[in-house]
Image (cartoon, rainbow, N blue to C red):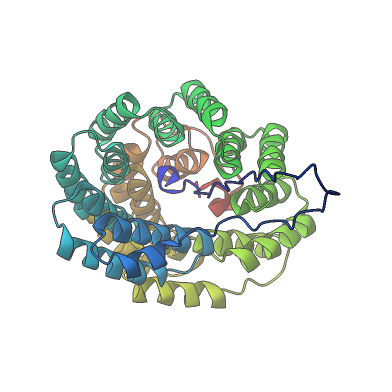
Length: 403
């Protein structure tokens, strides 16, 4: 989900060296002095192996690496770093927050919430722990507790991380204008180019899911102008091109995206665009990524439920969706279970989950389309044929999912 996707960056600090020149002789240009070399975190940990917060920071970097590169093997490295940190200071809030973040990255949200709460017990001023708690509670379907965690984070440390979470909380209750406002705050507060691009990207996502391709394209372009390496914004441009019927352009953009960041979401979007263009979809790389994620301890029944429902075996989709919803009864999991049950031929069982998914007012075109299709099949609406939902193409369902 969105709040788990913040980009991190490093600030480069320059040094100014002043050279004194003798006035008693002809000035000779002084050789440029190299700035002092900064110790790396790994070097620091070799020198100070008892630095538990250093180990926790190293774990956080590995988690970021997995997110930024699509390589889940970095989670195993993060686990090792956190194990070392926990041996030194098992009750430290930074260590507990790192463990919570790793659990969330592996979709173990109940465990993530438990660890985040332990971190807060250890340090009630741990803003980062409230952020992880908000993410975990959202994924567990407890939006009230998630909002409370966001409010606490806002009170402690208003900034990009808090504003983006507040934006998502507003979006989930259907308040798109407030969601936009908080993203504006995040953009204004950000000083790292990656964070500014992140805020613009999600403004593009909001516009895209309202069917406003022009505004979405402008926000994606702004994100890339700010931070050219922002792959989600490039994927956003691909989505706009696909929805606008420029399929060759979209496929060219998706090639760039998956070469840099082969996340399952992007691979599915690429495959659906190929099908829309009359080309065969090749799911080989997607299956390879699935194996990598499973080997790294990431349990992602949600992705495979959605994929199987649209492109594979509906019965397998139901199994995955039930497993996901049992662990994480959030809005997206409810929608996945509803759609899987519908595709498996049991719309009467699907309807309660579709109503759960759309019950907060969240203006997500994918959820709206699924509920409408289910209701049509049960004769609950007078309209006939496939429903039309603004901002949604039934041939490209993955494009309506939030990355």
